[in-house]
Image 1 (spheres, rainbow, N blue to C red):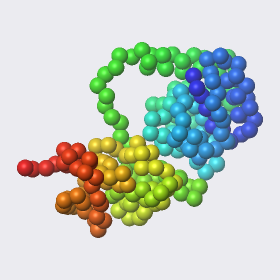
Image 2 (cartoon, one colour):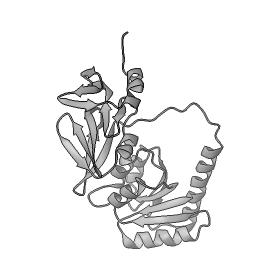
Image 3 (cartoon, one colour):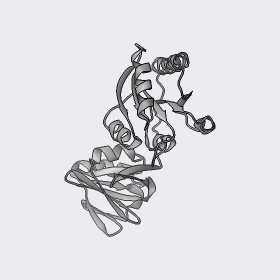
Image 4 (cartoon, rainbow, N blue to C red):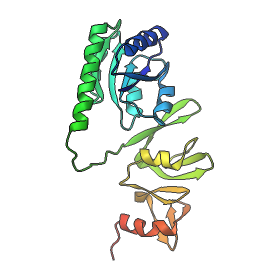
Length: 236
């Protein structure tokens, strides 16, 4: 299992690293002292398991889980036993390790994670039901800002950045259209051009190869027009 440690305490990270290295089932990919760096890492890489501290400055472990579209298995590590109650609200959290962490208790937690992953791999495939999020977070000046998906009008590519236009304001984010498209509900968002993603519910008018959303005129690629027509509720 590829795993990750997210904990602001250096001693805790060292102890968890030691425990992980003693378990042959685990491959410790990296460790982070704050949730923001871990969030950036997980936007590019995937892991099977995260050892996550709850109480971290600025951004709690629970806040961090909510930013992840498809969170891996998570084992909470904390000295706050009261937090165990809230942990039950998150499906991704499979266990709760109280600090200081006991080695035998740690092993039981790893066995539990391994069993869950094995069952998931052996589970017969079924009809895929796409999960969509009603919100996502963007990194603006070292702050994670929550954006409700339904408020997004359109997203425009600007070089190495994208411009997210919402009903109230705009955000310039250092990422790609393909990355943001993964975060948006595919039932209401559609890439009509190599430089534009639109909210289908916000279309006012379609004329020739352009779309009107509020006061913005958006081009439609020829290759995308037929698919767009299939997506809108068109009465012939």
